[in-house]
Image (cartoon, rainbow, N blue to C red):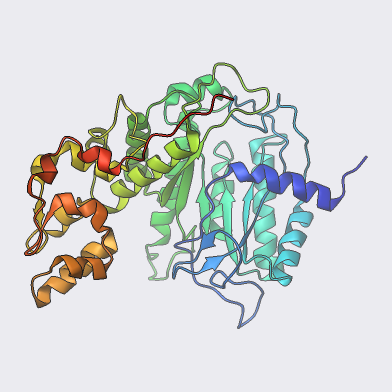
Length: 409
C-alpha cells in the first residue's frame, strides 16, 4: 500500500533528527520584498539562527531513508529493519513552499540516504534546490547535506544554489570509517571537503574582468562527526576537529552522540553518558574556536583521554594550571583573561572596555555579567584576593556536582 504524503513526512522528518548540522549563521541576507518568496532573515519557530541572531525555522527532512550503504552506526543502513519512505523532487519542492506559506518555516535543511548511486541522489537534491531558486524564486535559507562520492560538478552546482553545504566526516579516525562504513573512503570525503573550500575561496575573488565571481555556499561548510561509535577518546576527537578547522576552514564541526540503534553491531562500544559527553565536546570545541585554546591544552585537563564530565573543560584546564593564577583582572591581557573560568568572550570585552575608565572591583564584574562563583579562586581585584583558595586541594569539589544515590531497580 502506498503511503500518504503525511505518513512519509512523519517518517522522513523523524529520520532527519540524526543530522545535527542545522544552523544558518553566516548566510546571505535575502528577502522577498522585491520579488520572490521566502527570506533567509525572518523570524521563525525552530532551531536555526540568522547572522544577526534571530531564530528561523527550517523544514528538516530526508529526501529518502533508503540507502545502499551499510554503515554500522547508521539507523538507515541497508541492513536495518526500519520503515522506509521516499519523496520525489516535486514533493520536496511543494512541501517547502507550502510550509513557508503557512508560516511554519523560513528555509530548508535537506539530507538523504543514497539510492541507486551517489550521482543520482545528488542530482535529485540539486534539482530540488535549483527548482526552488529558479522556478519559484525562493530566497529562504537552504542547508544541503552533500554526498562526497558524487561527481565534482554536482557538488559545484549544489554550492551555487545552497547557502551552506555540509559533508559528513563520519568518524574521527580513518581506520574506524574503513571498518564501520566499508563503502566509504576517508580520502574521498576529504577530497570533497577540499573542493568546497577551494570553490568558496574562488567565489570571494574577482574575475580577470573585475567582476565578482558567482556565489558559492556563502554560509560556508560544516561537518558532522559521530561520537562514541568507534571507541575514539575525546582527545583524538578534538585533534581530528582541529585538523578539520585548519584544513578546510569549516564553520562548525557538529558532534552527534552515538546511541545503540536497532540491529546495531555488538562491536560498537558506548561511552556513558553519551549526551553529556557530546556537551563537553561542544564546550571544548568552543574553546578552540573562540578562546585560543589548542586541543593539546584541553587534553591536559582530560582523564585517560576523556574530558571530565563533572566540570567544564576550561575549569578542568585551570585546575591543572593553578600556577598561572590568580590573575590581576585590571592588568591582564585579553588572551589571559579568556582563560579565567566564568569569563566569556563578551565578558572579557566588557572588562577591557570598562577598565579604560578606572580599576574594576568585585561588584563591577558582577554587573558586567561574569560568573563570579567560578571566577573567584582565579582572579585578583582591589577588593578581592583568593588567598589560599587557589591551592585548596578541595577546590575541584567546590564545582563538581554532589554525588547521587544510584537506583537499584
